[in-house]
Structures are given as C-alpha cells and as structure tokens.
Image (cartoon, rainbow, N blue to C red; front, side):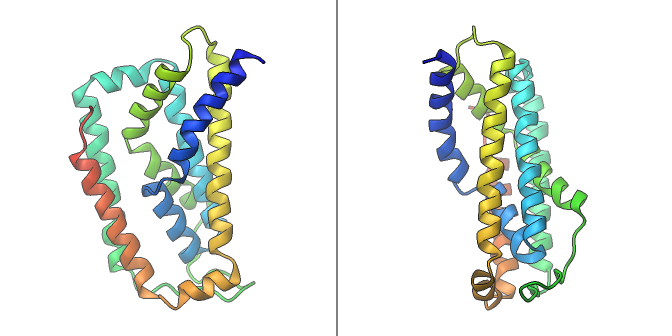
Length: 210
C-alpha cells in the first residue's frame, strides 16, 4: 500500500472527529438551512469547505507556522473572528421569528448565493484555530518528505468530506417533517443560534495560541 494512502487514512481518522464536533461552522450551516432553505445551507457548506482549503494552502506553504509563532497576527485574526461571530449572534437575537416556507415553496427570507457562500467562508476563515489544528495535524501525521502536491490532495479530500457532511446536515434539516418540527420552535431558532454564536465568539476571544 502506498505510504501516502496510509498518511491520508491517519489524517482522515483524526479529521472525521473534527468534522462532526459542534462548532461555529455547524451552527451557521444549521441556521442558514432552517431560515433560508436548503440551497443557502449547501452554499454555506461550500463556503466553509473553500475556507478550509484556504487554511490548508497557507499551512502547507509555511505561512501557518508564521502565524502560529506570531502573537500579533494570531491576536488580529482571533479578535476579528470573535467580533464577527458576536455580531452574527446579536443579529440573530434581534431577528424576528423565522417564517419557514411550505415544502416546495420559495424561502420566505431569500439570500443571494454569494452571500450564503460568503457567510460560510468568513465563519471559518476568521477563526485562527484551524491554522493551529492543521499545522499540528500535518506535523504529527504527515512526513516532511511528502510532496506539497500530495498534501494538497489530502486537503481536497478533507474539504470534500466537510462539504458533504454539512450538505447532508442541510438536507436533513430541510426535510419537510424536520422543518415542520423546527417551525414550531419559531423564535427560538434565532435565539438559540444567536446565543451559540456569541458563546463561540467569547470562547474564541478567550482562546490562546497554545
């Protein structure tokens, strides 16, 4: 068996736990799906996956090491991400009860494809933790002799799996029976997700570049 396949298996074994662990990305995809519909949820998932490739690219190129060693750069990204998540949380708390559409109807609160994608991208891109996660993951499980092109292939597999997972979450949440159950919660969808965003924003603000 190719040593690269063994490396990829090890990387994916660890990454699979990171995918399903609740986080700001999960909260964003859930809210987008419930409030704006399946298309917005899936496009948000693609935004998160693209951002993951963004993190992986500069980690592979060595910029991730520079950021991880620079308290100033880490702090700038950290506070920008914390401010963004807190802002999203406040907006969610202030939002009226979402009116979920009937099956087959247009979303009551339409969102452009670009905005849906951008929300997913920014939620992940403004979090410095992926920098340290991927840097640690690749340092521990990927040989320094592995070509950058192969490492990039690992990244594509990881991003694809992440997009598929969040797309599946979006599809599940937008099933008619599931949407009906959530529509009964009404206002609580915005309130709970808003609190979650703020909580993750505070957690990010208090995080350290350990």
